[in-house]
Amino acid sequence: MQSQHKDLQLAEELAASFAALKTELHKVIIGQDEIIEQLMMTILARGHCLMVGVPGLAKTLLVSTFAKVLDLQFSRIQFTPDLMPSDITGTEILEEDHETGRKFFKFIQGAIFANVVLADEINRTPPKTQAALLEAMQEHQVTSGGKRYQLPEPFFVLATQNPVEQEGTYPLPEAQLDRFMFNLWIDYPTIEEEIAIVKSTTSAYKPELKQVM
Image: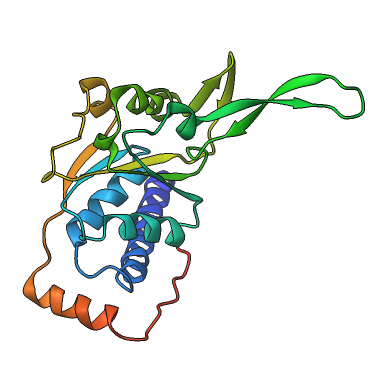
């Protein structure tokens, strides 16, 4: 009985925290309630999410605002055709100890070492570079030079795709798609929401976000 009461109390606290989270997000993001709820499901389930939508629908802004409100370290990687796997995971550089003259390799962490990683336009980079995310998304670690480096917890990859422009893109392989818990389609806002967006983006008001959860 006591266990059930505790579970109920935790559920009520989570509901209250989620309501507060939506309130903070809506200071910046107009509408998109369903997307916000599904993103929160992904984060609570410790999963990863692929968001599909045309440019200008505030995908990047939504993810960065999520990270601010949840007090998580945020990193954005712009995926391009010339992006290398080491640009994502990190690389080893040769350094020299000035006192002893001994040379050694030092691992420099890549952009993936963050709590929330935004893989922007993930399908614009070749499969070789896309594969750099496989181990990180599944094992929450990076292997370089035979050594394993743990990623900070919690760890989420939120990737975006543009469904319109297919020229110069590389379809995600099944192994990569399997790493994502949700595939979310972000649609255009309604007329009322567009009016609210115009009002908020053309005013001098700058919202102050509070950290929730």
